[in-house]
Length: 188
Image 1 (cartoon, rainbow, N blue to C red):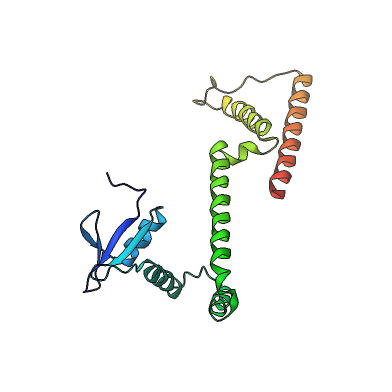
Image 2 (spheres, rainbow, N blue to C red):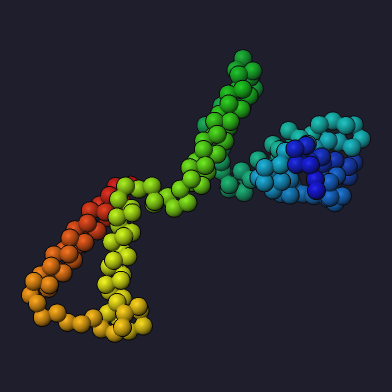
């Protein structure tokens, strides 16, 4: 198994072909982008001179994606980047960009941790448990009267007017609570 802690070494031959030293095969820019998306660090070096070409190829990957309409960088950001090369801000921009992306990565990992803590994001919503229990009761009442759905045929008819009134009250209460939950959901 490859050591994923070390950067994946890609060598560029004189023919400009890129060679993956771990798998001993040629790769494309899209393959390299895939390695990076998968979380792997990549280092691209020129075989003959030993020069590190990683920055050049990463910029080429970004440029190709941008030219395909996969616009991640707004025009004003690109403009500011170009300006930073001709001003004294040139030394500040790399640190700012690195810190910004570090904050983005931290935010994404915290969001993923929160999602894993609550496998069903709706479960964290206030009233979700009550709504789920009401749905279960409703489905049992509804399906209990249908053949083959857990009931033994149609529910027996009650002659008592008080039983009918209490069921109507219960149904009205459930409808009211459902409407309240729908309002809460629409606000979220």
